[in-house]
Every structure is written in C-alpha cells, then in structure tokens.
Image (tube, rainbow, N blue to C red):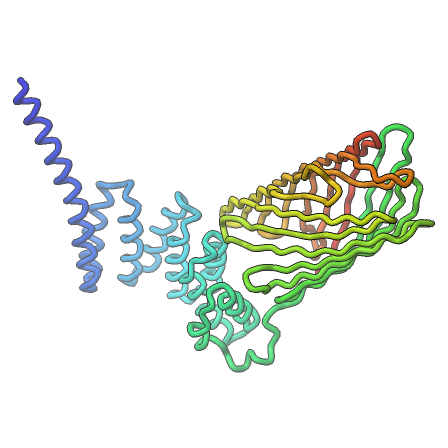
Length: 408
C-alpha cells in the first residue's frame, strides 16, 4: 500500500513539473515567433495558452501587444482595455495603449493616458519620452507651450537633455514655456467664543502669482478679536527649483490698535520623495510686544496615490519653541483629487505665549479643523473651513471661515 502512495506522489510531482515546463515552453515559443516577425504563429500559441490559463495576465499582455504588432491595432487596444478594467493603475498597460493610439495618430487620447501614467509612476522615464514625442508631433501644428512645459519638467526630473534636443523646435525660443497663473480672492470668518467673551470676525483680501520657477502671494486681513481692531499683512515667496528642494520665505506684520506692531519672519524647506511622500522643515521668529520667540518645526508626509487621487498623512516630528519645555505636534490628513479639489482634517496641540501683567505665561492650545476647496464655474474656487479651538484657562471657540478665489 505504501508503494502505491509513493508512486502516486511521484506521478503528481512529475505532472506538476511537466505542466510548469509546458507553460514556459509555450511562452518561449511565442517569443521566438515574435522575434522572427511571425506574429500570426505567436498569436495562435498565445490564444491557446491564455484560453487554458485565464489568470496568466503576463501572457494576455503579450498577446495584446502581438495583435498590435501584427497591425491589428484595434484588437490590441481591446485586449488592453480588458486588462485595464482589472488593473486600472498599471503604468505598463497605459503606456502600451498610448503607444497603439499614437500609431493611429490619436495623439490627444494617448497623451491623456500618459498623463495618468505619469501621476501613477512619476519616475517612469519611457512614459515621459513618449509624451514629449507626441507633444512634438502636435506642436508642429499648434500646441508649442505644452511641449516646452513637458520638456522642461522632464529635464528637471531626469537631467536628460540629450533626449530632448531633437524635440525642441527653433520657433519655440520666443514663446513662453509655462503659463503663469494668477489669482485674487476674499474671505470672511466668524468665531463664537464661550462665556461672555465677544465674538471674533475677520475679513481678508489675497493675491497670488504662480510661475514656472517661483511663486509669491500676499494677504491683507482685517481682524476684530476681543473688540480690538487689528490689520495684518502677510506675504510669502516660493522658489521651486532649489536643488531638489522647494524654498519658501514668509513674513507678516500686525498692527493692533493702540499696541506696538508685531511681526514674524521665517523660511521653510520642502523635499519630495515621489510616491513615498515628502519632508519639510521650517524656522520662524516672532516678535509680539516685548516677547521674542523662535519656533522650529519638522514634519514628514506619507502619500497614498491612485491615478488622480492622493491621500496625504502629515506627522510633525519636531515643533519646539525656545520658551516651551515640551514640543507640540500636528497630525493632518488630506484627500486631493485631480490636483484641484481637496479636503483636509487637522489636529494640533502646542503652547502659546502671552505677556500677562508683565509676566510671560504659557497656555496649552488644542485645535481641530476640517477645511477644503472646490472648483466651481468660470475659474472660481470655493473654500470652507470649520474650526474648534481650545486655549486652556482662557477660552474655547467654534468658527466657520469661507472664501472665493478667481484664477486667471
């Protein structure tokens, strides 16, 4: 009886090994036929193989490409669509479909797929190369700026200027490679405080200008806190190509009625690690009446990204002030869709300083907030924020802030 068992196991192992070798043999035979440009024979082998091996998606992908190589492009695209329905975030499938569409001179459709593939796999160089090639094809007719913007971003990311030489049109030297985006906006906020404290109100005006290598913005706020009128002017400047970093410098000036003006200066460095996330570190100096304080903050954000949707989780690693014994922290989650609409939830806990009766006093401060923006019609963007803020032993407040921004 034991002999029969051993014979059965031996036969099973041999059959399994033979099946694995048969699979490899079929794929090898198909590749051999493809190298000999015998695509019809390769298609026959792969169709039989995939009919018996429905879950072998590598073979199905090879079959889709072989259809196209055999000049049956529509059939190749249809086979890729089946794969993309199951794996919509596969950059290889998107690149191949874009390639097949370009063979049919459907360049705009192909570029849309390549843009999606770039979002999924920002460092996939072949995706960028094909997009530059197709934009160059279109640019001969009309779309020069998009070509130059893609070339500039490709060279910045990969440092490969040799590849782009042949795609730069001489007539583009007089065109603007990047379209500046400007915006103007206004906002209004109302905060209700607990107890007998008067409500807070604020109104703001803002302007921004986003260019290819840098951006800057300014904001003027009119505040009424505790029945004290305050005007605050703030500005920031962003330099985008600071080696592998983005450098931000910011400043603000506040002129409370009947009080000495207060101001702050600071800077921040951001470093992106592609799909893995990004890090930031900032330094800020504040002067409020007779109080000077320096704050250092560092944070890291993790990113989950799928096609045009991103989820950021930002965790503050360091958030210290020279007057604070224990560091504060910030936790933030944001959901970004298509780089336009987003919603963000934040929690922070830190210490604020106030000069009470010529004595420096620390207060624990906890904040919860949900804010977001959404593009509506005619380049107008709506923003909305809900805030719950607790300053220990002083007040609690609930606020709502809203605004509109026009982008042109």
